[in-house]
Image (cartoon, rainbow, N blue to C red; front, side, top):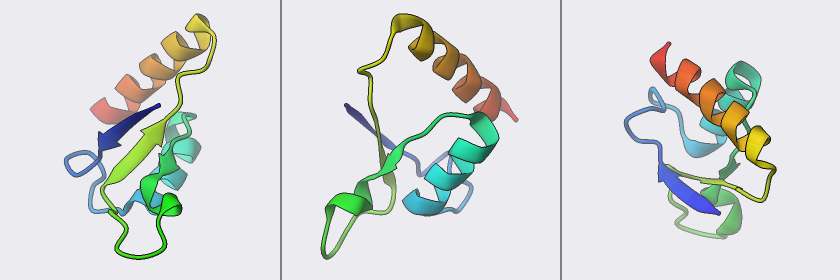
Length: 70
């Protein structure tokens, strides 16, 4: 897993809304890190899983790149 700070890319969205938007608009799913907290959760971090086939990761990286350029 890798955690990413979405502060500069989330366009004002919290981690939950960003993950929902990312799934719908880019076809890439991340997990909001706040899902792992009971209190005082960070809302600027998301978690990506890399336990995927190389081609899946390559495709996801391309979709993320297109999404972030839009």
